[in-house]
Image 1 (cartoon, rainbow, N blue to C red):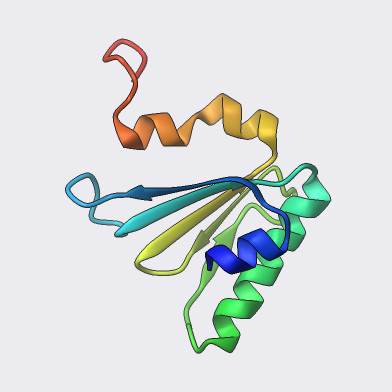
Image 2 (tube, helix red, strand yellow):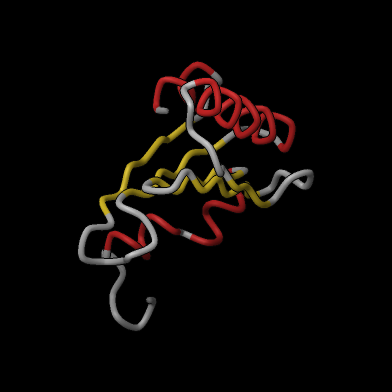
Length: 104
């Protein structure tokens, strides 16, 4: 999966271990694309590659707007953002527990 993101020039790829934090997935991956078009391409290619590897039941949200696309791969949830949207939501900070209590 990381190779797919890197092949499509996703930026600032972060992998967050969700063990003990959430039952929705084991890991969260957050990455950025430089534009709506690139965010959409990154997401579409990832889904295609995962389906070729035999993964079924992949769900995605956020297309065709492509500001923030969420891809549910079961044990892994992938978020692909435009940089401004990623900065606004700050998922890495929220899920890694790095925010002070008043900012969480």
